[in-house]
Image (tube, rainbow, N blue to C red):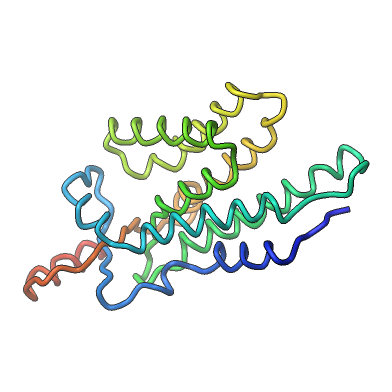
Length: 214
């Protein structure tokens, strides 16, 4: 039987299922995600909402791991209920963060959010190694959207490397969740966008930024 600690589960749902797009005010701008976006790192990272996105995903995912348990002595199949329920919540959360976007026909690239999920849901050494591989690989290939499938594969490989017997199902479920942004945009074509802080710029530059989304 699945046991739920509602004092932790409800905050987890609030943290994870609130689309970040609801917090995008007038000073948040969207930019189409190019293949090589190294020139845009500064303005992207200067937006504090990315830090909030990372932190709430980490805390929400960790809350899930401690809020969902089973009674001692239950069967092996029942022991999977917390993992399945937790992975289901994470999957819904990732879909919401990706597809709830204020720009029409666009998908928000939730880099900070999925990174926080990995650190919150998996052991630190497994998550840290997977993130390192994903960041280095994505930066080296200069293909930003590859971050999601690469992080999925890296998470699975990291779990199999450190503790395959204990972590296999957990890292497999996490990897599937991490694939979702890339897979869903592939199946339901959208323009990838990232958010960044607005600068005091002229009207001409504002229009050119918006034109990238069309």
